[in-house]
Image (cartoon, rainbow, N blue to C red):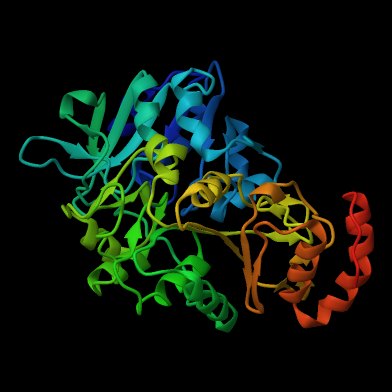
Length: 426
């Protein structure tokens, strides 16, 4: 048995609930050791692990022989857990997580962290993330961390001293990169439509994936953009280095970009290291409705799986499988709607595998109600649903659907509005 395995077995008890940073913030050395030692750690009581967005293959369905998985998302490699039926979904607004943790509704026994080397004051940064981890650290019985020189020291949020860790080890693996493919013509067309609505001086919030990165690439002709977002990708570093992202016109945190997690690669990590112009904060700040409403021209840009003809949005289930999350989209869309000059935007390709994503009836849950829908964007244009009746929404959404699906959507529109208590004149 390795020394690390012995130490983990001394600190982690049967029946414990474990939390760690999601996506790029996963502490690979520790998480892989846990799953390898799961049978020894779970003797006398199964382990429980909170699952966020995945960026590694650490968690596998077969590990459900000793681990119960629960979480708010089934993104990336963690989709396999949902497809195998071993991921218990928490259908919660992302903004609720810190409160649920602090109230003890969501149990936390052990937190595993990836941290930067300490600064001159001996402070370890959480590096790539804050999000819900500060709340989890407050409640945890045990905090275990791994340190790696490639983890950036970042400003904002919680910093820890050596005495805060029950165990601190050297990491065997560098930080994970968030892999993305280059945007194709459809993503680029959507990005151009979105960029045409973004004003100079706007404060940006972006979801995750290829589409937000395409939008960022389309904004290089803008001026004095700001950042207040949960996720921060490589495109943010590129905008900042080009002098486009200055945060100069922000009404809050002027001159400073705010994020919850760095989800990119080496360029983003280098840019963020000891950079006072970017701060990572906890979810209870990045998603605070009062903060969002007070943000200057908050432009929230999020994705979806499908949108129905009245503006209801499904961001969770595709082809009967849970692949997304309730997440923070509703928080940001509502915040942008309340922000002076703000824009609540949901962007998606008009089709997927030949099927329309502008639909008469959702095939999954309503992740965002139609009352919170603002601008819906596809490669075919922009449907501004703000202040529009149901019948006008139907017309505008059909107009941005793929042309080959519009006639069928027209035929289904009468039934759609009849279910909603309205009439539609074609």
